Each structure stands twice: as structure tokens, then as C-alpha cells.
Length: 405
Ligand SMILES: [Zn+2]
Image (cartoon, rainbow, N blue to C red):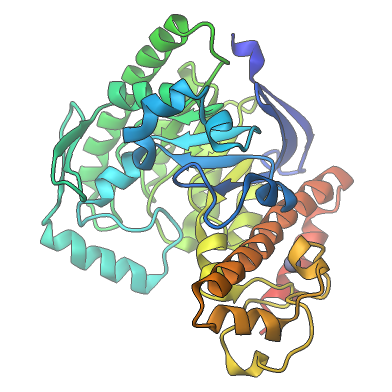
């Protein structure tokens, strides 16, 4: 029943794109804009479900590719929310990005700087891919056992229905920043055909599994940095019966705002939109301003494990010797459980640099809680500023302080 999933807009920005709203799912509500914490393998690394909740996160995104060999087991456990112990709203991505990035042509999803682009183009030129894209789907050699596997739209839907997240993504072809316009046209045609096949598979599975909670399906928009392709795909997918939309693709960071405008001006306003794989604060502000409702990214936890911590005055690397005697909390204004515990920067640094693996794991946990809370809380504050009518003022003050250094 689609009524188990819906989206309401509470307030819009004057530009008619950005908004604060509410997504209702069978496993709970998501106030938007919101950050989805990433639990690739159904768990957020080093955090228990309770610790994830302590960050204020309201939704978890897991990965269709990393979970596909466990899909039947997750299904038997009652779906991702139950299997993971998270019990709140969940999302999965289609696995398409991971199987295609086994090929050498594709790197990070979005938001690249010039150096990333050069690297991508060099890799793309080599074309020694482990994955092969055809009209039927993507075949790839599994990196652990070498078995040849094929992901198709139908396979992706089957896997995602078994995993049972509240929100799923259609299987799409992500192009690389090194791909030509002509290649992007062909890939987009494939993505549209795959979108129709995903919808068909999804409708069949929804009917066959009518005893399960309703799962929403988002169509995914590609089209790189081409305005005509972005508008075309948004118009095309916008007319199909998706519950929401995922915004993907590889493009330069500077183009993010334009690309979101091209897509979101065409998409139906009444359906939620998810931006795949971004969490840098400047990108988040651009996203929220231009109509993105949810975000996800592995960066907050991955950076935490490397000692890179977010603060309102910019990021710090806690491994740096300047913090060896620093008795202040990670961020004096942060109300996450780590900062509230009285832990100092010097103590966290010692744990992270300790030869004992138990100490290191404690550091990973404490740092991850802080970083996830930082981004989750930023989205909450953005939501409040939209509701209060002072988004632009909040954005300018926040970014000025954060990027001052
Ligand atoms: Zn904190």
C-alpha cells in the first residue's frame, strides 16, 4: 500500500526549490532535509544501533551490492530494520554504483575537484574494466571469489525487496567524468529502459509480497553535467510512477547547484529527492537550497576513523601533534555524546594513536559519533532555518565560520 509512504512539504524557500518536509515510512518518519547515516553492511562501523540513534540520525542507508549475498537471510529476519537492530527508517542503493566502479572508469559519485577529474579521465582511458555494461545489465567478476555475476534491473529489485528497506533506488548506469557526451546519451537511454524494468519488477514484487511493509522506489537521474540530458531525464522519469527520485552522477563540484536546478525544476514537486553520496557542508547547503530532501555519505564515519573531525571552525586532524596537550572537547559547542562525556582532544588523540586495537576501536567509535552527529545536526539546523524563514542568513554565517581557516 503506497499510503504507508508519503511526503509532505511543510515550508518552501522563496526560490520554490528548497523545502522542509516530512517523509512517512512504515518504520517511522524522517523530518527533512535529513542526513542518512551509511551502514554499508547493515551496520554503521564501530557503532551499535543505540549509538547511531544517539547521534540524532533518523534514517540509515545500506548498500545493495554489499548485502546481496545475504539478502535471503535479511528477508528471513524480517528485513533490514529488524536484521540490523536499527528498527527505524532505512534506504538501500541499487548496487549499480559498486558493480560499475569495479570497472576502472568510475570513481566517486559526485563533487570532484580538478585533480579527481584528471585521475578519472586517466583511468577511463585505460578501460581495463572488471565490469561490462550491456543493455540487459552489468556483469562483473566478484572481487573475493572471482565468480562472474550479473546485476540487472530485475535482479536489483529482487535483492532490494528481500533486503526490505523502506526506500529503494532503481538500477541505473552511472557514467564516469571521462565519458563523452555521446556515451552519456547512450547510457541515459539504458537508464530509462532500466527504470521502466525496475518499476515493472517492483510492482510485481510488491503484489507478490503484499504481507510485507510497503517499499518505496526512487528513480535515479543521471546525465552528468549536460543541461539537455538532465532536463530530459528529469522530465522522462518524473512522469513515471516512482515514489521519489535519486540524484546521481559524476560532475564537477562547481556545477552541483546548476545540475540540481535543472533536475528539480522538472521533477514533480510533491515527491522526495535524495542526493547520492555527498556530505561536505558547502555541498549540503547547495543541495538543501535547491530542493534535496535527503543526503547520504560514508565520509563522516570514514574521516572519523582517520582522525579527521568536524568542528564549527573547520575540520581538524586529531592525530596532529598540536592536539597532544589540548584539554578542550572536540567542539566546545557540540552536544553529541562524545563531546558531552568530557573527553578531551588529547585523550581522543592518545586512544587513536594507541598500539592497542581496543583503544583504537574506542577512538573510532567516539569520533564516528561526533562526526555523524555534526552532519545530522547541520541538516536539522538547516531544516529549522527553512521553517523559521532565515535559511540564507543561517547559511552565510555558518559557512563563513566553517571555511574561515
Ligand atoms: Zn561532538
